[in-house]
Image (tube, rainbow, N blue to C red):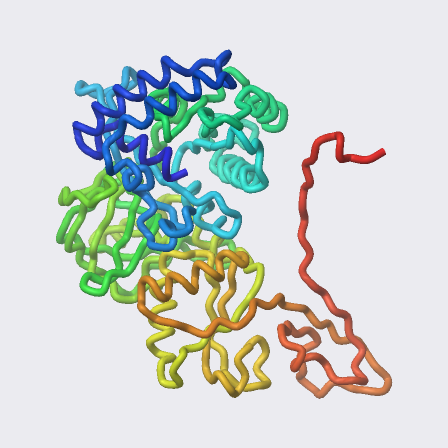
Length: 504
């Protein structure tokens, strides 16, 4: 929820001392005005609304500070995860300054951008799960909760032990609007998810209610990053959380450092963790890169010169190929590669395989408007896919008999792109225009069907022909005389509804 994330940045001072003082003052007034018993009282709501109007003129821009894409601001939705680091003074701090370093990742909520949520959850120790006080539990909330629990369970040494997993903190939002039902929704959340109703925090980004309580709850309940089992403090092991392409600087990576220190002018290499299918130890990429700039994101960039264990920040290392910096990529220092590989040292868990292995929901063909514009289109889509892990890209032949080509001989060569839903298709098209000034032809999305051929007395399959094919166009449908089965995608769903609608 970008509005709540922006309020957290405001409260912790990332947007300046003046805005921090304003946030604390107005947040204190709003919190004193609102309480449980007056949640549905119109006078209290009007009082909060009038309090929340005493804000600087740029509040509208600041409240969606992490929604940096044009499509996000125009549609009022979050489609891209965004990160920021902040310092917060809290009694639980163990250093003499009394400060805690918090690394926050703001994620989308829509199901079409679920892979952004997956890669973000894989990079944090806790998650703030938001529930709308007016609409209650929504389908995407259940999906996010399930992902958080699965990732948390995978991390634990003992699956039955709650410690060491991913801490989920329930929070109600929009409690100041007239249609809010905080008590009813809190009881519903408690019944469905098992949370203690007294631990569910109540917030409003618009009225600055509950911001302090959310940050304090994070500091009290989310554990600090755990050390790798063989962490000696010297060997660098960092994981790419996100990356994006800038024309003048190449690929910029957002990293989380698990061990060691990364400084400017260090040479880094990519390490592929040993997989179950491919034994023989970790693998090292053939290329290495010199880190030109290192810093943190707050959410604007602050050049620090180095990053150490527990920090999250960005690096510019002269990478030109977007495929070298996919989310989940593990980086280490070139001079430490032999020690890392020789000792088969522990690497951070990587979601790279899991993210790339998720199947697309539907497919469409993407073609350039001009016949000679394919190379430019492919470069733009590759760069866009760098920070949109939900895209699945394949090149089509452009001929009328190519399975899944979608464009046929009329549109020529193109790209077969897999999406997570219809909204994802619309956002993809708009981002191509906004970020690359490229208008592309996107065919209507199609669903793949699996054709399984069976033995037939009247028609024999040519030798070497596959017994199973995936088709998306009727032009590729098997001709008359074949015997075959048709398999189409199905959806495994849970339907939650009030008992009144259950029938008799």
